[in-house]
Amino acid sequence: MSDFEHMRRRAWLMHAGLALLPGQAMSQWVQAAEMPLRVAPDAVPAPLHLRYRVRGTVAFLPLFADGYLSWQHGNGRYEARLKLDAGFLGTRERISKGRITSTGLQPLSYTDRSQNEHDTEFDWPRAEARLGRGGTTRLAPGTQDLVSLYIQLACLFATNTTSPVFRTDGAQLPLPVLGNGKTVEHWRLVVQGEETLNLPGGPVLTRKLLRLPEPSDNLGAELWMAPALNWMPARIRLSEGRSSDVDLLWSQSMAPMPAAETA
Image (cartoon, rainbow, N blue to C red; front, side):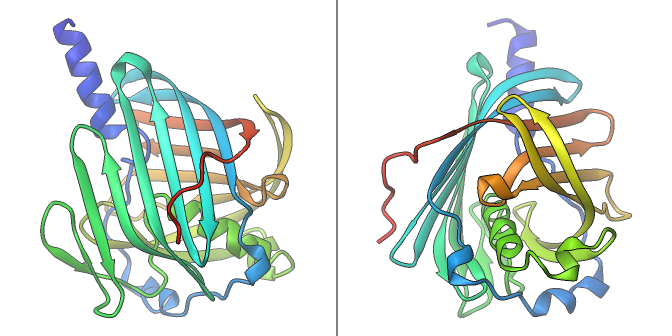
């Protein structure tokens, strides 16, 4: 492998997928996240395996990959996996496991598989997370990880399809996310209305969410949640300044992978 290919592979493993993370939280949104919204029991998506075509740039380098979002649950437990496969550049997989509660998903462990495996354990009685690279950080009620957040949003949309918060353009939805592996970030997601997307898997009606970047970063996230996919994301676009822009486009819905250990 040439020096250029080594450099390109390293950039992919460091930045690909959801390595595009928010910066510091804004204090005025901490209180908003203290009251997680409730989730109806029938709003939890059925087990599903979605495939995505992934295109974009990472550290100014072109990216062509396949993406997979797998969702399993049973007996009050869940497992969600987000995997990006870029061929010789390598793969990156993130795994979330936890409980399903009256407020939706409650992560118990989060694993980031790339060159090294980093496990984060969620200790809800202590309201803290033990980070895979050492140390702890405080958890806000309803905190999600970088995989569970997509299913949590699907649960919230399915529960609140008639709520003004989820239907009014410009309405804002706060969501605490353990994003950078060190601290909880308080995302602000703005509802931007309905859009019909022509994707590799066909046309699909969606409702768009836009993450408002904080003043301390230049990171962006756009999510298109699709009722036809049980409100799971039909498209995920993540950007970091001018150097990185990753776009996941739904291409296929498949039967779930073999059942995970959710008991």
